[in-house]
Structures are given as structure tokens and as C-alpha cells.
Amino acid sequence: MGIVAERDYVYREGKDLETVFDREVQASRWIAVHLAPGTRCEPMRVTAEYSYRSRFCAADGLVLAGDAFTFFDSVFSSGILLALTGGEHAAHAAEAALRAGDTSADRFSKYGAGLRAGIEAVRKLVYAFYEETFSFGARLKRHPGVRGDLTDCLIGNLSRDFGPLFSAVEEFAQVPSVLRYGGVP
Image 1: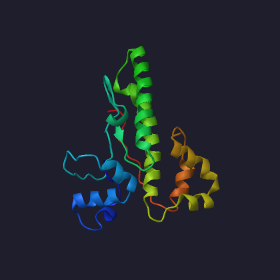
Image 2: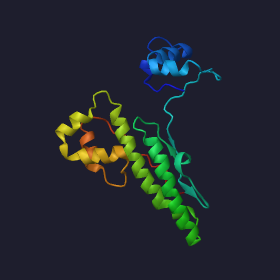
Image 3: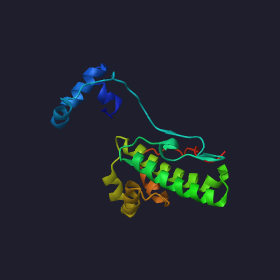
Image 4: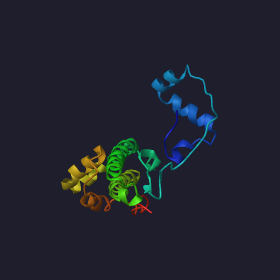
């Protein structure tokens, strides 16, 4: 059980983890009722910015899939989507490599490039979402032509070019530069 929130919100009344957790549990009657019979068995811990991407997606005889390749902690459940679809794409790439008798790292470069493109699209959208002045509704009013791109990105149709969407987003929010991690050595 945990809390995901911005630092200023979480620590607005102090940094005692037990107090913060109890306050947030009590803020939701449903959660409070359902946690009441439970027993805490571990001490409270804090982690921040829990996202990562491997430097490489593959090495000779090895391909990274799902959370072994990347984990993106976002607000849209995209991390789960990326792990599952990444695993599916890795399985197809591994099957093709085994059938061809070639499990070299280079064999997985297309897999890595495709997954990186999807990760970057979701990453840009999440960064924009966290900007205080950003609003999906306002962006769509000003740029109605990107509605389909936004929907596709949110539902995980990530194998397309989102250039027009992020051009529109960049007018209102800072979009991070592309991370080059995840290729082949």
C-alpha cells in the first residue's frame, strides 16, 4: 500500500511517514475501512522518481522485456501497458531470432527502436500532465486536429508519429528531450 503524490502535498504538515500515511488513509473512508483489519508488517519507506530505462535493450543472446527493459511510473497506467506490450514485442522478436538462428544484439534493434518511440511518447505526455498550467481540454480547443493523436497515445496505440500532438503540447508545456537509452550496444 502506498501513496503517490507530489512532495509539497505529501509533506505539507511534516515529514513523519506514519502521520502522512495515516492522514492519507483517513482521507478516504473506503480505504480506511478496508485497511482497518490489516497489520503493518514493514516499516514505512519513501522513494521518488521511480522510473528507469536500461542502457541497452539487448545483448548477444539476451533481450530485455517488460520492466527489465524499462519502468515508467506514470499517471495513465502506461507503465503496465508498456511492460505488457513490450513483453509481447520482445517475444515476437525472440521467436524470429531463434527461428533465424541469430540471437545477436543487432537482431533486436528494431524491437528496441519501436519500444523506445512508444516510451518517449508516453513520457512526453506525462511530463506535460504534471505541469501546473497544462490542460488537455485547453490544448484540444486550440488544436482540435490532435484529438485522435491524444486518444491514441493515452490508449496505447503507440506505433505512430505523434509529432503534431507534441508540437501542440510544446506551446503550453515543457516537453523533455528524447532519452537515447534502450538501443543495442
